[in-house]
Image (cartoon, rainbow, N blue to C red):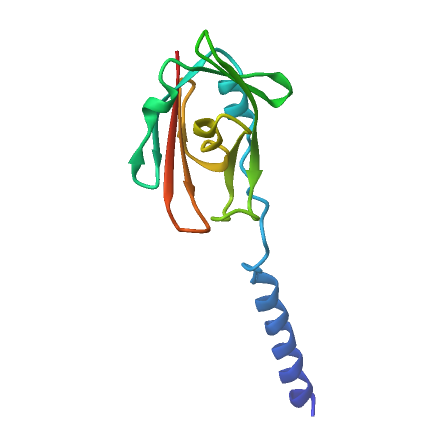
Length: 154
């Protein structure tokens, strides 16, 4: 009789031991990317567009001679000495809600005019960045076109 009680007790101890070594790999982790280094990089100096491709059409010349300043209060200014346009900018950590949700950084740009600058209005994903260069990509949810934008520090 003692033997019949001992077997289930040993089985229970064995199962508890195995259960304590398991982990839940499905638990979501907060692996958001910190936007601060990118913000600190672009927040200093003037930048220029060195590459802009809109759905396969290279349109970099639309921004020739324009200096972009990513100022405080999320104010973006583009000026060529004659014309000056104001817009907005921000860098946000994003893991949902855009066309390609992932744990990435979004570089958000907004201009309401002129039409050439309106084309920059997107929630760009950062491909790469350094203190002097930032490469961006946007995949359109509507027509599936891919846009590329590169800023380099003057």
